[in-house]
Structures are given as C-alpha cells and as structure tokens.
Length: 193
Image (cartoon, rainbow, N blue to C red; front, side, top):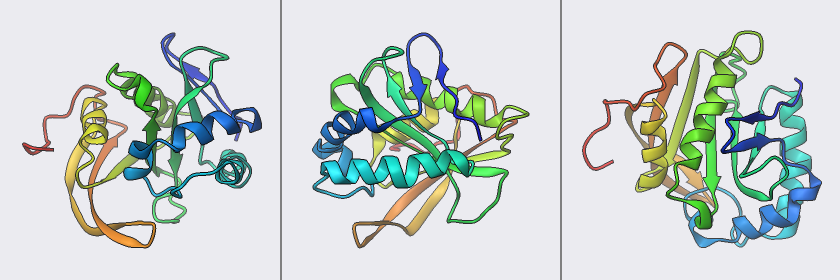
C-alpha cells in the first residue's frame, strides 16, 4: 500500500521516519502518554527505533498505516495516529484506530481533526475502503473518549479486562464508526464518559 500524507491545512499526517525517532522518544516519555497506552514505560530511544522499523514500515505494506501528527508539513512530531488489525484478525474491511498527542498541544482539537482525516481516507473507495473503524481506550481515558465522540464514533460498551497494559488486564471502553455514519459528534455516549 502506498504511503499517503493527509492534511486539512491545520494538521498534517505523514508517515513517521527514522528522522522522527528523537521527537517520538521525547513525546512518549511524557507520563500522560504512557498512562493511557500499552507502549513501554519508561520509553527509550530503542523503543522508538523498534516502532519505526518493526511496526510503521511493515504496517504500511500490510494495510495498517501509521501517521505522525505535525503542525506543519515539515514540523516535528507532536502526536501519532494509526489504523491496525482488530485482534490480529485479517478482516480487511475493519480496523482499530489508536492515537496519542503530546501534552503541549492538547485542548486545541488537533486530534479530532486528525481522526477525521484518517477515517475519511480509510473509508474512501479505492484505498482501504473500510466499513468499520473501532476505537478502544482504557476506562478513565476521558480525553480519548471525547475525541472519539466528536469524531462520530458511537459508544458500544465496556469490555471487561479488554486491554492488557504492561502485563495487567484492565477494563476498556469500545466505540465504532461505520462508513455510513456521519462525521458529526455521536449522541450515543452515556453520561460521565
């Protein structure tokens, strides 16, 4: 699959490269990033190298794109967003979305814009042509839930022990957006999430 850069003029999504390893390492050392993800903690440069060489590059070849979120075409990485297989199944009509954002740029709607761009590209005929994109987050990750809700994902429930984070099973929330769902905020979320 050909790598694609996506932009709306405010955020740029481009495949991360080896030139981004130091920026990725710095961002992923933020406690708030490690708190809500399954990435290694502490996060070191070797983890970023492994991410680029063992996940990003093969992912693009296997219909699992990962983009670096930037605030300009050639700007440093401030976040990451990707689409991957669900539970390692090879259902080529669905994917799971995952993302993180550096603390310095949160609260500006950047990740919601990035999720819209990624979903629009993933649902487009002739590229991934997905029917369904799932979002999952560890229970309590209200910032991620807010992004998913604003990006048109419909809440579907609680997965008891649905996530393994560094060897510990945790409950997770699940939501999904279908190709036929409008990109407007979804009204199906329970209070408090």
